[in-house]
Image 1 (tube, rainbow, N blue to C red):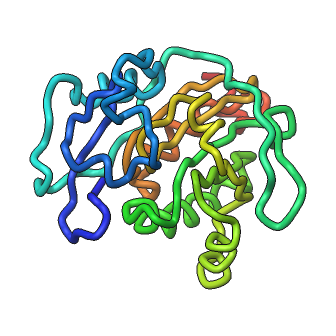
Image 2 (cartoon, rainbow, N blue to C red; image 1 turned 180 degrees about the vertical axis):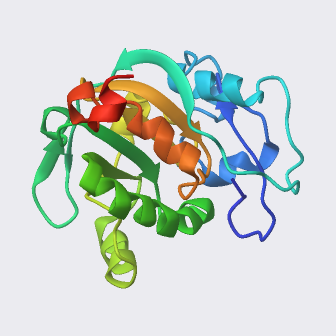
Image 3 (cartoon, rainbow, N blue to C red; image 1 turned 30 degrees about the vertical axis):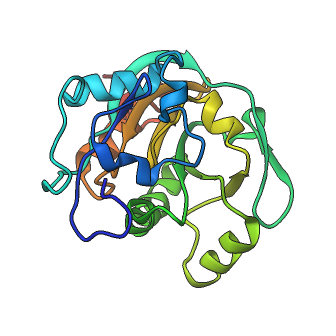
Length: 225
């Protein structure tokens, strides 16, 4: 992901409160566990596994180095925390009210440049995935609803948008960097994670998410595998 306000791309990850790229804080919500006062915070299970898969632990890319898209990495299965959040436009959405089947939880904010850059691709993926029973839910972090309404009055929302105004849900999911994507299977278990921008147009991304669908939801040829 790229630091906000710059044209160059970089890769970043937060692990146990340690910034692996110095300027990653630019895409951290204020008061993030990445701040020095919170360095003793417990290790983020989902983020840690994703970082390990990417070979980022213990190394840092230069802030101005070109960064490839981040692949969705398998993480140790863990039930998603319970939550209830207001929906943009009215109503609420809870863990129990998530669509049936596989759900992509995409944590973002419009003040985060990499998030804005990624949204069109998220929208393309969501449009194609809807017919296969895969839902995309956007979790907006630490942002006023009025600002979000203005943004989506000009840019179509890729899916339902919930408002995590106080970062309570981001903390529960141990999300410390934006954008972050978590993929839940039909049992509401977190199975895949990515910290940074994902290549949503890549066949490998679609295949990794589709592999989490229940056998009954797969075409006959795939259900036999």
